[in-house]
Image 1: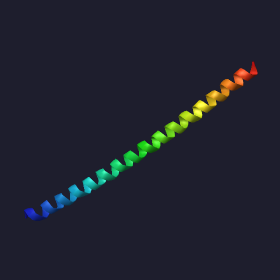
Image 2 (image 1 turned 45 degrees about the vertical axis):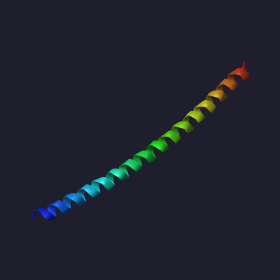
Image 3 (image 1 turned 135 degrees about the vertical axis):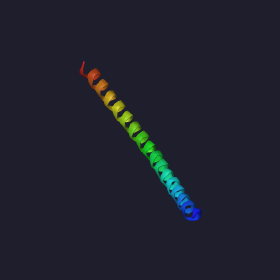
Image 4 (image 1 turned 180 degrees about the vertical axis):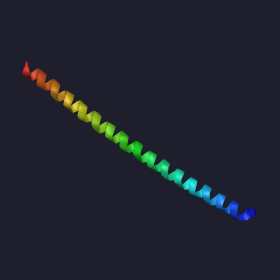
Length: 60
C-alpha cells in the first residue's frame, strides 16, 4: 500500500521542481526585459531633456 502513494509523492515533487525552475527562468527573463526597458526609458528621457535644454538656450 505504501508503494503507490510514495511514487505519486515523488512525481508531485518532480512536477513542483519543474514548475519552480520554469517560474524562476521566467522571472529572470522578466527582470532582464524590465532592465532593458528601464535603460531605454532613461536614455529617451535624457535625450528629451537635452532637447528641451537646447531649445531653451537657443530661444533666449
